[in-house]
Image (cartoon, rainbow, N blue to C red; front, side, top):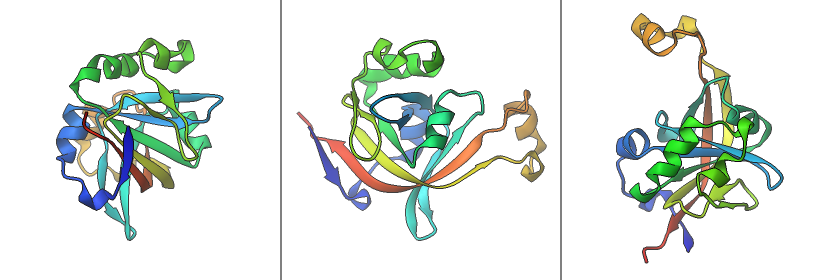
Length: 169
């Protein structure tokens, strides 16, 4: 069972949560949604709001869902869901129902879809979206190491509007 909490009451390491434990970025509607595993992103304060920063490559199927909707969710899981996150990171929703195949249970609310198996969920309202501009990179090694195909991520900044945390059993 989830309960809503104040984001300022949370205590976790965002570097561990995003880079090491990963997250699912999910957008869509009851009719159709998609999710993707992410290990790049950030959390912080910007424009007098608590925000998330997500980065999505142009070829990712989830991008069209994020662009279409006003909200997206970030779902964080415990280690027991590592296999599901690996599956969602290595399969496309274009090719089938990867959510079902990963063994995840989508939950739909008035804001954005999320997953029953998550331990923590951030619901984010899009504030900004822009493709990364290669001319803005000050360190050329980032371009050669991270963008050899020139498939620059689109960055989204989302205001964190609601946080759910699963109650410990």
